[in-house]
Image (cartoon, rainbow over all chains, first blue to last red; front, side, top):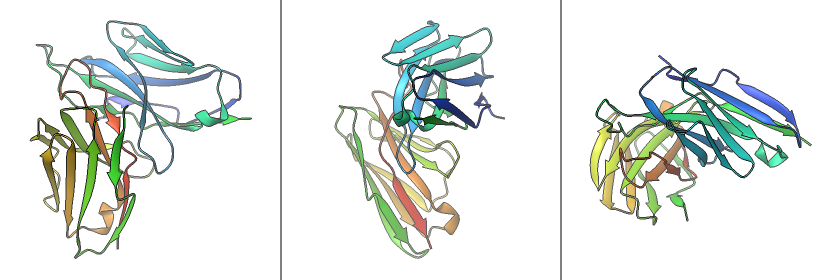
Length: 117
Length: 115
């Protein structure tokens, strides 16, 4: 049962344009979401996160949007640069009814982003 | 500084060898993690240490043995591994385990090949 899904295995974008990476989740207990970028043979690099009390968080060229009712989040990269070419993982963490985190991240399968010069 | 370091970068070992992977962080984080990642797959959690105590073992085979000597160091001892254990082994740390935010910072990984 895949609780975090990234339905697009790959995305190709022209340099300077917007990249939009999507992520859907099924577990309504997820309340904290993260995006990581990963180059081949390297560890994931934390990019940006969002708490469920917000619907948007920005950091430079990266913006994450959260739609709780649709159980959907997206990462926007504007403008896209060739150095952004990597695998992007969406991850989520859940809390129990008492508000205690389970302390585990659930990752999506990743989307390969290619930004062409 | 959000750096997690891992050594070695690459490791090739036979099925009868004993080796260790090392991880270090100096961010004052109290939670440390081991993950395994196969090609084209997301990281899979193996172990979590919180305040130097093992908090989660995701039913990992006993041929993998974690150790947390102090709050900055995390080791993964390997013995009698199988070729299917070949993967990228990632260490991560976070400020707290099961805290108010769960942002984990990953090291560069150790690429392990079991012959």
